[in-house]
Image 1 (cartoon, rainbow, N blue to C red):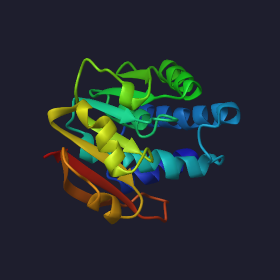
Image 2: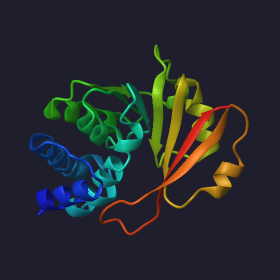
Image 3: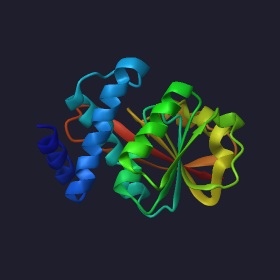
Length: 207
């Protein structure tokens, strides 16, 4: 059932991924489910819900980041959206950043088991992360409000890069509280197969 659900979801997202890539995506969900029992990676326990609420939710972002060379996933947690994006976009270099040691341990293990050569893990608080590189895209999913995201991670964006926040309802209040440094460049609604809830991508560029 999971394989059919994933294939149907990918079709609705207009994403063409080879069978071996789809297998790896399902392997990733299985890994999250396995480690979740001990490490409490996500509140979801059901594999089908993980597939829609986490996997397809993350993969819906692919068209909006596909041209980027580097991506930093801030507060990656169980690897969302970073690992699904790294699997779908093997030419992109993905860095997963999370301060929780247990979650970072899971991320390291997932990279090994999924053979993700384009992905690295950093266990550090974002405000303390001293990076040698700047990133084309700095993305977050349920990490913080927009002003905090900009304040803590804005310095990690390359000059022509973009910050992307994955949000539920259109965050009008958070957008209104944005101050200097970054400005709103767009808000795009996402339709996630199997997810009966509002989803939006908020794009921020250097002011």
